[in-house]
Image (cartoon, rainbow, N blue to C red; front, top):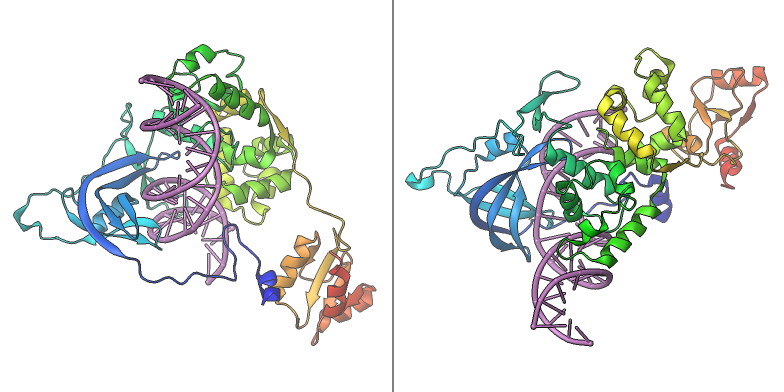
Length: 398
DNA sequence: CCTGTTTTAGTCTAGAAGTT
DNA sequence: AACTTCTAGACTAAAACAGG
């Protein structure tokens, strides 16, 4: 039913009309040799199981995420344990359980989750309080946000990643190398790479020659003019991924406008802050994260340096040429062809404003069978009323 | 020019936490 | 309940380099 698929549509990563049903994944057993701690760009310390390589589901698995301290505790995995492994969903390696919980006299201490970041600074790690409930969160984070070299590298990796600046030739390896050589320590450095003429220094590196350097410079130039949405993803603000970045981008349209509004929003009672939380999809937590990002002098510095190097492409305002663009519409009565939510979402997507009650500002009233007081009021006010069918005809040209 | 190695980027994603 | 974010993984092809 392609028509139903069309009505359901997609969310950011998946269609709402399809789901995979899979057979239970194949399992295998192996030895857990080590538990490493990886540091993410937000400072999250993630325990990773280092496994004796084992073939499972057609691939050789040697690593698997243990997610967080609670998960390690739940599984009670310890170094040297024999563990059951599967590829969750036939894809992602996963430690299912410990197969020898008694350990038969073999000494093994419970895994002691580190209290400090594994980075050279060994910053204390903390379980942050939940932003809403105030209870202890699950993720352990390195507290040295701006100083921690591991985090800084991960943030740079994120900056050049596919959804962000998408700079070809700058991957994990190169970013790490450039960072260690102090050639790139913040985003703006990427764009001054060529003029600083560190080429000789660059080419001194193994496996890197003139071609690599020239390709990289070309790739960087291609991104000097960047869509607002990509810049917002690249900044790495908590809770702001592709979907939210797109929302902010189409809402504020230009960097200038967005930035001034965020600075103004630092006053939580300002219109700017209220407008931000009024966006459909942005609540208190996201708004706080965004505003706090710009309130941080360190970030303001990074942004200022970066903006001196690049130009930001304004977002294209959402199409406004539909027959109902910027019209206010009210639905009442029973709808036959679509659900109420669907009707509202559809109207909003075409640039119409959906209201709940009829007023003098209402442009259209779509009235199904059983319409009562709203229809009466609309007629009194001389507002154009139509049936669901007529509404569909009106918007069908789009 | 050939061969082997390194790196990137594209393919397939899941699980857990957190947000609205 | 529905959704996004953030973290994580293996395999493979292609590109580019080094060294013979």
